[in-house]
Length: 236
Image (cartoon, rainbow, N blue to C red):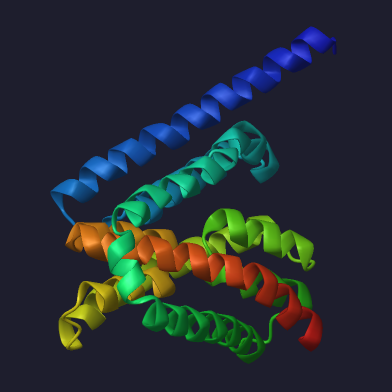
């Protein structure tokens, strides 16, 4: 097969899988705005539909990953965008930096310990354990850490999505039952427990909650980049 034909096939793969992914994500966003149930979240609907399409046409996951890799690259700049609301609410953060620091430290340790404990309880192999360990980080952090400590970044991505969706859903339930009246407490709960999905949910509640959740998510990710590697190396 000529080089031109190979490049043409690669371009077609990128166009098809990117179009499918974006189209169903946009569709799920519209659906979620109309009915805001957690099981209609774009993080649930879009992956399920795309997986169903991949299985129905007999495509290979690597082919899909090759066609949508550029979307993963865009996650980095997207993370930077979370800094805007954080900067706008810097006075709130300055007033409560001690409480935020303590919450981030405890949240990071808890996230790593529970991820490892669940993996051990389920009897997962060492590779799956290390893949699961960064599940409470946002996607760019998690996939990089997973690769560094010997996990599978693609499997880690699945754990991250599941953690985000379930964390946002459980966080919403906890906010209903727990007496958390301050924006700081509500935002920190969602930012630590559900990373990016939690930030989105926090912004639905209020701008202050969203800003705190975004800051906490970034700080937890930065701490876990270091802590995840140390934790895994100490237990393997």
